[in-house]
Image (tube, rainbow, N blue to C red; front, side, top):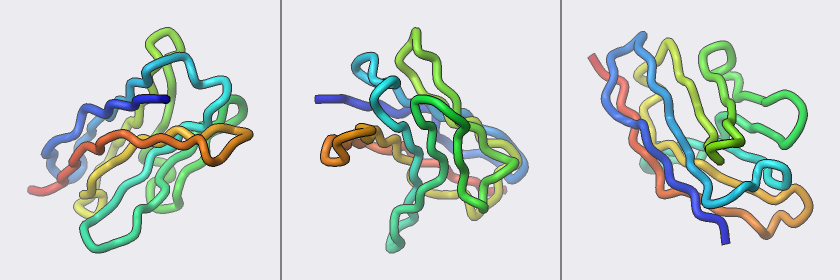
Length: 118
């Protein structure tokens, strides 16, 4: 069982920055793809960023050039640095871990609210 705990959400003005953190309960980065999703009430959850165990991260077109995902293996933590935030980035952001070989092994954090507003 993998536990994920997000933090770092909050209220920020347009153009501002936030950094979200996702702390995992163990050393999972070599066997799990780490993803950040976001969801607006009444809409489908949207994949924002993907960080594979090796190779380059991938981003949704809507955040490319503004968001950056990274990890600190020593801290078992994944980060989502969000810059140049827009009101349309307002959502609940979720961290997800999906096993590279067994897709059924997928875990979610509890979510953290990000609100971009003047």
